[in-house]
Image 1 (tube, rainbow, N blue to C red):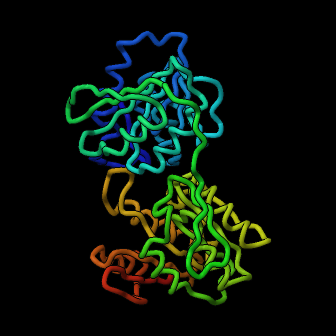
Image 2: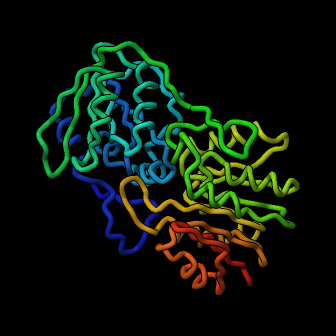
Image 3: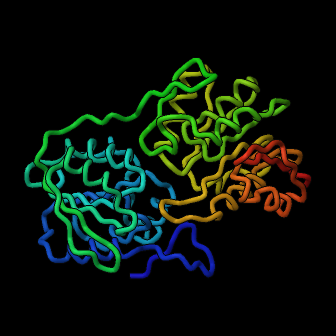
Length: 355
C-alpha cells in the first residue's frame, strides 16, 4: 500500500505513516474483525483506514489535511467524519492515534463513551516519545484500566476495555479574555484553549483599521483576531479559515455572539483553492507544527495563499517568533516587508501586494 501525505509535494521526504500505525495494524490482523464495528480516530493520512478497508469502519478526524489525505489514499472510498457528534451506535473497537493535545484526547474519550459497552475495546497507539503520562490517567478515568504492549520500532499500544459509565464532555469551555466584554467558546482542539496566548495578546495590540472591505483571519482558531479586526473595521466582511473543524465551529460561535451580521467560514488547508485577488487584509499567526511534525512549511503555504488571495494593494500582517525571520520570507514573496513592532519574543511584520 503506497501512501502520500497531503498536500502532495514533489520530493517530499516525510512519510505518510509511522511505526505506531504499523504496530496497530499488525495487532488488528490477529483479531477476528468480521461483523465488528470499528471506529478509527485521528488517522493521520489514511494508514489505519486504508489498512482496514473492507471492514465496517468509521473514520473521524478534526483535521482537513488528514481528511484529504485519507480521501486521497483511499481513492475517495473513505469519507471521514469531522464531528464527534456525528457518531452513531455502539463500536466494538475504537482505534486512536493519541493526539498531542490532551484536552482533545479527553474530549474524544468523553464523547465516544456513549458509543461503547462492556465488550468494547480501545486500542490506542503512539510513538513512545510522544506518549504522555496524562493519556493513561484519562483512559483510566473515562474508559477503564490500561495495559500496554511491548515497544516496537519506538512505538507502543495502550489497551483498555470500557468499564465506566458514559461521561459528558467538559468541552467546549467558556473563557473570559481581557479587553472583550463577552466570553469566548473554545473547543478542545484549539491552541491555547484555556487562555489567550502571549503571541495573540501582542498581535491584538496591532490590528490595523482602515478602508478594508474584506478581511481574512487565516488560521483563525477561536476567531479572536478576526473579531478584533471587525470591531476596528465594522463595515468589513470577515472570513475565517482553519484546518481544524473545531476551530471553525468555535470561530463561528464566537463571531455570532459578538455581531449580528454574518461572516464566511472556510475549513481548508491554509487558504488553498480560494478565489484570487479578492481580499484587502489578511491577518495570520502561523503554527510552526502539524501534529508532532515541526517546520515552517505551513507558514510558507499560508504566505503564498495569502499573496494569491489578496488584491493589488492588499496587506498581509503576520506575527511570529523573532528567530523565524518571517520578514525575510515575505520580502522574497511580496518584494517588500516592514517590521511593525517587536518585543522580547515576537515580531510583527507586514507586506503589501504590489502587482
